[in-house]
Amino acid sequence: MAGMRQYQKDASNSARVPEPGSVIDIGGTRCMAEITKEMLLHGSAGRRVLSVVTLSDYYGLKQWSKLTHSPTYYQTSDEILLLKKHAAEVSNYIVPGAVIVDIGSGGLRKVMPLLDELEARKVTVFYFALDLSKEWLEESLEALQSRYTHIKCHGIWGSFTDGLGWIKKFTAGPKVFLSLGSTLCNNVIPVAARGLKLWADTMAPGDVMLLGYDCNLDERKVRESYQTSDGQFDDFIRHGMEHSNELLKRAWYKAEDWELSREAEFQTEPTALVHRFVFRATRDVKDEVLGLGIKQGERIICYESFKYPTAVLRRQFNLAGLAEKGSWKSPASDIYEFLLVKGQTGADSAQK
Ligand SMILES: C[S@@+](CC[C@H](N)C(=O)[O-])C[C@H]1O[C@@H](n2cnc3c(N)ncnc32)[C@H](O)[C@@H]1O
View (spheres, rainbow, N blue to C red):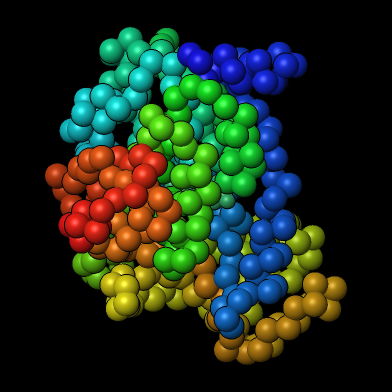
């Protein structure tokens, strides 16, 4: 419990030490408007992107959680199968007293097989779910609270940047980072590797990261996973644009000015199957207060998913200064879990 004790000591004001089940505000929604503005208004290299943070309010997270149950959405079910099958082996890397940070925790049913295994072993650990909606964290933690006695569950409400700042307070004690559901590494390589490295840099010897990633390159399977017969995936994505009006405090987005479509394309150098939602302006869209001028036909990219083969992911791990200790594959598809520690992997294993 050294990590938790050190945190309590460093926090000095014991009021900041969370009660099990509580959600700590480490930055809250302060960041959401900033990220939205930056990406939407000043997109680099001619790309305007609607940040996924616009989809991470209570309504968005609830909608997304429902979508993960759709029959074609293999990403969640296949990763759960993997975690159920290999929970015992993965748990061997988690020591008593560890602080587990679930980076972008979303719906918590995915982490349950792992926590169930630790509970069965009577291993006391401190689980912190990090995400962007306080209400969502509170609601989802309730289910965990009643399930466990050895797992002390908390929420940390804020952005990844806030989470990185917060974790640095754990100057001692073992840490476990969870990045499930392709949360980290899902970007063009230099950007993704930089993001991963920020977390790697906070890791000490003995700390581990469990990184789950969707390496499926079957275009049809991927396309179908982002479609539901009742159009709920589209509603979820459109909600991001509506929410951006609230975040930017300007009604710049009007549904009738935008067409929504999907794209899936194969890339080489590095190999990837990229799926994205695309909003296309059906007329010129302007907002003088925001300094926004979008011409008819211009695009805004949303919810981009990079499906990388394992060799490309391993290159990212290397760039971030992480070495692989183990990996497991889902029995149902090319969803993987990688167990990473700080250190450089040799060239051979990067080719695996
Ligand atoms: C792809 S989902 C994965 C959710 C969950 N880990 C799973 O595997 O089902 C990514 C999650 O990260 C959260 N997220 C995305 N960007 C974030 C940011 N900058 N700061 C904090 N959370 C973020 C989203 O709200 C979402 O819940």
